[in-house]
Image (tube, rainbow, N blue to C red):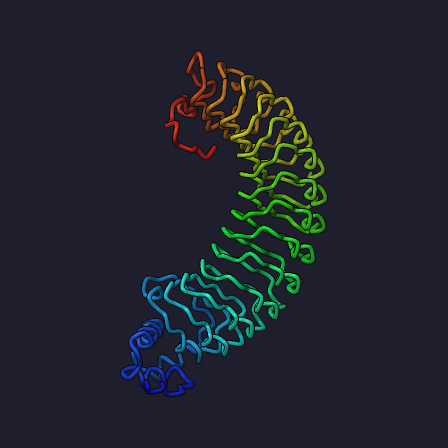
Length: 375
């Protein structure tokens, strides 16, 4: 039977025992000694216990797997790890003062030890092998919860976390978001690269200011019509064709509808506060509805079916315009746009490749067809 490790209570104890500790534990002790800028165990203990934060993604920390030497640092309020070798979070149960914790580890499967950290207000988890977060229902002080690239499908735990103001679930397997309906204080919600089709549960989240539903399976956006406090809305890469639910969102300043199935953009005509609008990769041919959007400084219209760009001629605040890959033959209608600094007009049958504004370098007539220009 392997010899049991001594039950140490302080970092000084861990440090004094380091020569008899397993290599992975010793590696953590050495990392903490470096962080304390001393090899003296007693002085390191004092220095480390004065710290309230360990926020790093250094190469040294990425090798750490054993968190037990951290267990004595009970004054920590913020802690983050980026190490795919970490599998056991049990040593953290003693860190009762933790308010913010972030871990990025594909080796992690069990997050239940975090359930005892009742003072957490900010939690971030990344790990493709994390499949169950139900144990986190006790973290009722959470205000911010981020989940990156996990295998989570069930998010019912959120029903109990009614203090949340910010939720980000990025790159996952989530389809059912009905549990979000209770989260009335939410101001930021990101559900990108998931499998969401039904967003009815969002209709009552009227405090939302930022909503990102990029890369899902959404066709019906009617539930968004009540979210009149939204200033940022990202619906790119979905299956949307009908925009009739958007006219009431008068506070919007940034809107991304690229990579959908949109032909009619008339419902956007009343969104007078828009500063940035992205409509790339759709089925748009008629731009007449855009002329009322006089605050726009950036518009992306590449990869559509546009011939006539005359509706843009009065939009004098425009600084960047993307019109690549359309059916445009004449761009002189843009000559009055004195604030224009970037015009991407490649992959169009332009008769005269003369930039309508100066300097001529403001116009880009040729780029690689495979290059997805940001405009």
